[in-house]
Length: 410
Image (cartoon, rainbow, N blue to C red; front, side, top):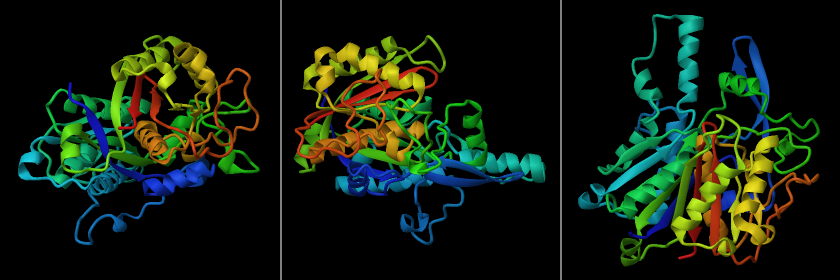
């Protein structure tokens, strides 16, 4: 099958809206988690989360109307435009027919959904904005990206909770491998920091207890005193190309996307299993033709929930054996929060930047190690001067969809 490389990166993230700023702040162990105030029917509500500083006027011309696009779609379009510019690709009419979009989101147009139900239930049930359906459909963001770049190839949206954007990248990889496309813009986005969605996640009792002394330290993956996940928002998109085509046009290649593994953890809707997570990693390694000892860095799913962190630790040990203890593993969610459907794409971009910079980002706030999580989790600050040749990015989701991506230096 054809080989696939990454030639463009774009991010809208809580730690910055360009890849270099994002990675630099991660390496310093800087957290974007802060108090976030949302307005509900009975007044303001306080939570901790990682919000993205996003001004749409910086990304769209003054005459381009965007009020018919939800925040999640604006994130996706801004990150996609950045990735395409970074790739230096020139879309001819012929290439546009061989280029497509693969997009992932878990919650979709959260802000518009909440606004619509507030209008229906608290204001006037007979007045709803005429473009509501077109704004809230989950494939709207991907469709806007395809329109933005006039792409006539596959346009697919995946929604499988926290692995949505990893799946979208993996399936875009397959499109190019199998020859149904030559170029794919792939990734995902989430913009779910609304009053109602905070309430819904709080009701599950899996959000972190805010750290009263330092809210930015509320997310503590692999730590004995971890209390749960912290929500984040943003987008990450990559440009994938058939390798021969990218080389022929002289493109800068970040890495080769070498392997993708996806399976279903069917045992429970929300409880992960060691067997399910391990199988996804094994599938990705096999797909890439990579031995466990060849992996230089693992970007863990690392949600800071009691169950996931121990399960993932055990799964990594079962797959990597004696190599597990020497491979740096980190959860960058400790700093940028959990982007849900957009998490996998953002963490894949971070993994690619680890290759580009020969550096490994840390797990922040790991001051009290959990004895059941005993791998090299890179506590504190990142490590520069590392020989990072092959990376693995893990995504495991409610609903059971596991997705693992492997990239290596080209």
